[in-house]
Length: 449
Ligand code: ADP
Ligand code: ASP
Ligand code: MG
Image 1: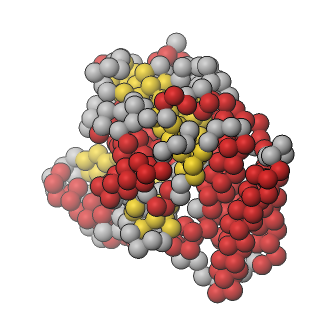
Image 2: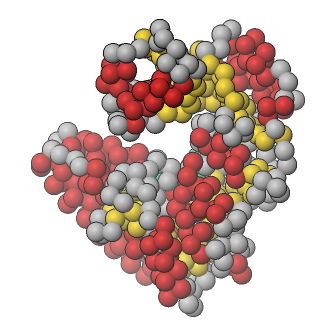
Image 3: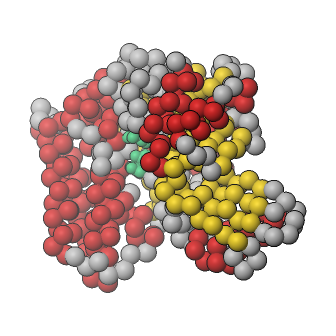
């Protein structure tokens, strides 16, 4: 069995979905479990519907709901024009889902209150709608397809918008349900991103969570591999939206790919790697617009080559410097700082400490950060540097590459913090945001030319 996940751009319209069907057709003998995202930009549209409803902007909500339904009805009609009876059935299902959403959002509008639980329920609809239409399209093309609601399988905690699965319950659900339902059907189709709590309320796995879903299904089924189909030829040496001349990475280890995701490369959701790594399942990153390209394989580190793999960057970060007059020692100073951050659940990207100083890199304007810094400033001097960016070179053995710091310094003019990650898989530099583009270009050229 294999898992094939198609992201938003891979299912954005009729043409894209026809490509998906043809890609899956070529893999039927491997019994695919197909996982789909919402159509491109639909999750964002749903998020807007939710917040406009909370603000009680009824007219705006109606307008956005109309956009949502036109897009999905239009797509169903285009895909199923030659199968009138399937089209009828599909339109009925889509109508039912959209009416349910309208009623629910109407309620949010009335009370003007949006709990995380209601929010999750609204934004989960993108995957429910896309997967419904795509499953009819497979059947219309002669590939028998069984639609399964992922909420029956992925069981999470009740952190509704960033829910974390209970792996053992989920694994048992997936095995049982897929085992029962896969008889006599060519493929099984389910949704990424959506899940439910043990009490049965809808939850979601967080922004871009469909990759994570695919890895969870792969782990539970002990799949031969997990294929992540997207809109680029594999994982590149840097985000191709930021730089021309990037190269494809042919093979990368689980740990390096996780480091890339942690340091800002938004090609794979950061949590995707762990379930696959646990069972040693290779992840392939492939291009649905160029399916003959071999893409990138993410695999065990003793199979992937050594050396720098990528330069990644992260914007909108704060560099925070905490200084004391006395030599408190690393344990005391770091303990004090972390106490203030931990109790407010503030995620730290990098922390560096000496006997009297701590340097922190934190995502900008995180809720509760100001309060945390105020409490630290009672016993230390706190300086916040804004408009900073993090630039990282990632790969096993990257610490042996000479001249990286020089290159960064030359291009950026000033380095606020330089660091080698504890796992030695990345070297990281904090620079001024306005110098990021030039530094990225110079560093990428230096490492990969
Ligand atoms: P999907 O909708 O398929 O999940 P995403 O937009 O989430 O697609 O991810 C694909 C995008 O990730 C690419 O279009 C690319 O701009 C971006 N990206 C960021 N860093 C990298 C990288 N190092 N290699 C490839 N793509 C990257
Ligand atoms: N649709 C969800 C999102 O946009 C999940 C995904 O596409 O990965 O965040
Ligand atoms: Mg994605």
